[in-house]
Amino acid sequence: MSQILDISGERPSLLRRIPVRLAVLVARLLARQPPKRIVAVLHVLRNRATPATYEQTLRARTHVTTTSTRCAGMYCLQRSLATVLLCRMRGVWPTWCSGVRTPPFAAHAWVEAERRRVGEPDEVHSYRVLLSVPPLGEPERAP
Image (cartoon, rainbow, N blue to C red; front, side):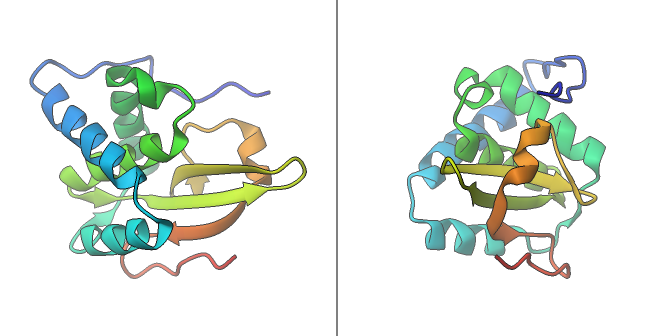
């Protein structure tokens, strides 16, 4: 297994943790919704955002995982949603993806920027994208 990319475990300052915690909370609520509703909400939220760079997305993901132990663990849906929400609060939008692999069956959610998966191990490349919400103007990936 390859090493997960990180930017030195950088933890946001106390004041900057407020939007991170808000993104994590909203992501937790959104993660409980059906996939169709999640995608619909993300389609609305991406409006007027510019495409995120890899570095911007990695920084947001790192802030999410260093602030929330739940998101640092195995809750990939909440982590990916919190990352795109935090990016949106900063005026940018990465591509949110959800997919599956077989065998053995497994589901996963992640974010991409500049056509690269952000902060994910190499084995995530075996997942087939089922749902994606890219920045406005970029094509959605078909299953």
